Image 1 (cartoon, one colour):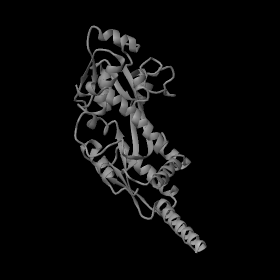
Image 2 (cartoon, helix red, strand yellow):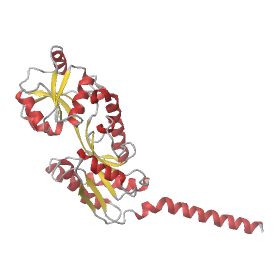
Image 3 (spheres, rainbow, N blue to C red):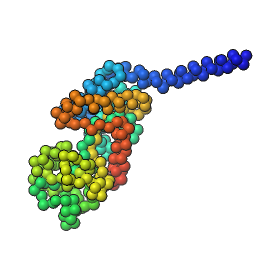
Image 4 (tube, rainbow, N blue to C red):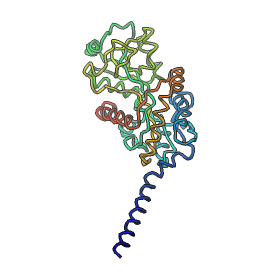
Length: 324
């Protein structure tokens, strides 16, 4: 009787273990068994669209099962509409969205109502990064950050931006706050190109600008970089913010992050992250991306989250400045 009781308990234990194992491995072993939608929260033709369409066939290549990764444009609300759709999707890993950080990070920090929480998103990968620089016209007499600060003691330094709440506006406010010069953000510019031209013409003395978008103007001598938020190999001799003692600016950048809805099983998230990592290391994709002038800056999902958390902390620290 005792032996039979032990036998029954053993069978029950093994059955329970089998159920648990199936529950743990089930989603991962089956994934993916249908196509994956990849939401682009902007119109066709822009940088986010190009990145998603470049990488999607290669992600397919490195998934454990043969399915399609289908790009889907969903523009609206400065990228928030598409991200919200990805955030609210069924947490099964079959819907991904690419996010523009800080574009989608600033609104909730400023108290605007959004239907997503970046800290709860399941991040899969970082595709690219574009660090910032503080620049002046190539012909400007301003030769250093210290010179800019000295000039600001007699007049407010005007920095161009697109509009209140925009990435350009936020970066200008943060640079002013961290560096500690008297500045004024002038909104109304259409984009980075117009902001850069305003500096070159002398309409404004300086600007915070994305490095990749400004590179050709630096190479031509029309723009002079005083400082960058990260060491840039193509800009030798330009000191980083960290080297100059402005640690809060360290690493600040436009990040293109890929995420899935909260609640996606970790095993599924890992499959997706691995596929993106392998795709971005594929020589054919690297060559295609470089040809399109859209280089990748790969990070895993876990690394992308760490970068995001660091930037969110800076935005929160300067919340009052961003709100002005």
